[in-house]
Length: 371
Length: 137
Image 1: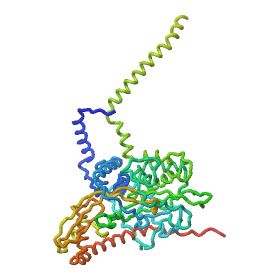
Image 2: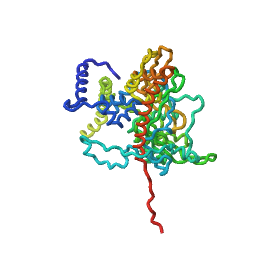
Image 3: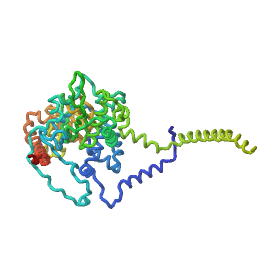
């Protein structure tokens, strides 16, 4: 129960003033700029865009600055901001097959058309702290090589040609695309809604869920068919113009997980798939998303659904960190009346307990005295 | 217009300054909003909503009647207005050729050069596998 309490205004105002001061830190240290956050803490920006569900680097950088680097707080700020803008419409679905790839690796095939391209990655670094980064670090100029003009088809397309992997489900004619920012979530939820939920879901939560499938809670034998990161073009059908106009490009990471077989008396066995897609360079997020997407397909694929990662109500209801933090953190707001009633109840229970205890132990006491 | 969407507002404005611009007016004042971005299940399947992006739009009409529309990712309304102006100019008999030559072509060249540089840096990280000699026989 909530109750209006007066008297905290001045304390709140002063607390926010103190927060602004603490956020700025030592004023003898140069203030951090949005460009610095965007350029040098790029993966934090990517995460805030993904989970804030709003592609805008500058806004995400501002949110990170305002939140003092607390990314969930920053995501909350971005979500609140998006609610203030009108929606012009929806984009044409992006074509990740035509991505200008900056990184693209496959753990299933060594020789893929277009090659294995490492790009800017932490993989194969030794994870040793680098003291040279502490100050005045100037990186070497990147190496260059002649770029191939060969296309980089998705690895799943290559497997698909031989029928070794299930094809992606196609939309039925006139089917609408679910949007959980517009309609409340209902279960069972279709894959479009599940993917939207996972795409904005908390990376840590999805990581733990994905990890749990690997440890045996809904095992589905995953291989990374492909991870790709790069730029894709965005087009928007503008009604006033009458055709799809280019909006520019965005950076995306896509993960195609290849999983254990399905088959039946009428269908030859083939690999199944899990899919991950997120804004920016978000590899851990998209890999986890793909694992969980596959796990959530348990029922559709006729698997026993006993593990948490296979339970769509459990996963989808707990993946959103803005909702989760709202409910967890509201516990620190005043609950004085709530607590008073609990306290009253507890006192009454204790009274009843003492009375009952006194009554049951009294005869024994008399008996002892008689002896 | 894809080239303009990739350029900075300042770059478009600087190029436009080289043109003797005809009279024009805003048909739609620049405004910012959201577009829901869509992906496809598995990359090539049914569409799903991935998340939104900020988008700005504007429309400009030349005194000679041509109407141009400007759309771009981001919250820079002025950039949307400049794209709309270029779009209108591109349709005009008098300015079509010069806006292509003096504004769009140089920006396209810049974009192509930038992409080429990025592609060359990416290409240097491509793995060249070689097989070690097997210890057979």
